[in-house]
Length: 316
Length: 311
Image (cartoon, rainbow over all chains, first blue to last red; front, side):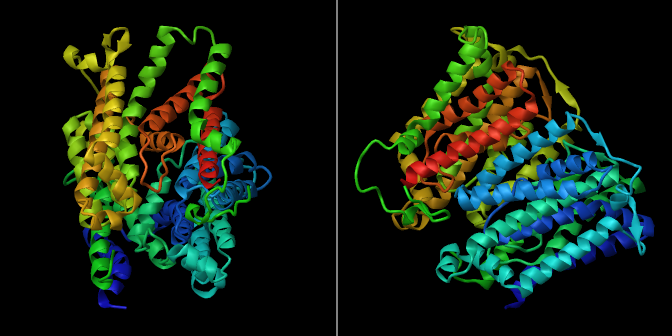
């Protein structure tokens, strides 16, 4: 492990810290409780989706369906909110298992399989919702999941924290985590070694679906409504967060913690932009955020490519 | 037909004997059969399907997808992918050549830094639409320019101009893939990049060119769309086009792993997607259900081809 490698991996954390310091020095209220809490509340959904995406990518696959699965989860949980919130999770699990079946059983390329699931989930969400937003029940504690706090932190932040901790444990301390990495590194070799590659793939796609469903539950609870047309572009945001977090898209390598940093960093760019506009020295429309995110992704991937080139000389 | 799930195609032995193999037959001509079936269904289920007017409506709507999918076919043939086409269409509302230049930028990222195509083009997927929105401030741009609107609204011999454009481009691309050195080089790069390099194929230049071509195709398709509407809306032009184009290529039988370019298949694939949309719309099925049908179609087509190739 060379210094370059470490920088490639932890550069994102450094960038996150720098951006926070920049914001704290430049804007008052940036580190105020209100901004921090609403930032965490809103971005927890993206972090959850990015976590699932990180595991799928580490296994050498990709999951384009996360955004529309989250939309489906939000509709399902909003419809079922008078009785409970679990249906959104089940919808996510169903979509994830469908992905697993298409990839593992059908042998269809993950890109195409999850592209199809993306369209199907989006269609199902619209059908279930009747082409409009579905209001969630306010009689039960459903909306607490998105709007409530516990010990001073928003519930979505707790959920994301627990999931990332669990993800970190699975990746670093279990056989499943090692199998996922081995599958992404060289699937044939992993198979020949007798690793249970298929089981690992089922698990990562299933988990990605569940996490997207969970993000959907939070979405519905936060806005008090199931939103069938939300989630457009979430999959690419999640891929960007994973890549910014230093996980190689070729699979076989990656980290859960830096994925979280990547997701937070992308969210923070938008937050900083809002503060900059609030300051009024110059005004950037909301459209700039995607330009800036794109630029950011560009800088990161170019840096990553150069660092990878240095640390592994035989990079073919 | 015993087939182990998850095994790579190369590991499956070639068939020992020739006989009529229905899955293989379906796989080879499945796309055409499906298209014929859809046309038949449309003719039976909807009035006036085989009239020039309906034909023109369908061809007009499919022209954009076909043009983008042609460029995508070449990119996929080199083993790459281009996610940025939809955003480039939005930018083309300003200038088609800019889309070509941005395509070059995609190719530059892929070749110079060896960034995976899906990540390299993700940059412009995210930033490109933002650039278009910033340029127009998110407003609808309307215009009246008759010489330009000819692309979208004019007709030659009863067929809309953009349909002729689509046909001409499809023929040009088919010729390029089959008859030119560049076409051979594309397939060589996608088939085995290292072998192609050793054989003296200028791999980086070929890759850069296909991304430029894909960008230009997206630019032309963007111009067609805004010429039809006489307006350019940076928020909507080309939205989701990358997925439609990739689906058209996949349904058309070009493997996403590269080394193949079936131009005719891509045109048929795009027509199938359009026909499914049209038939479901004509039958009064909700848009949402049409999405589910489209998903099933993509998976079915790709799965059949996979079986056909493996058997």
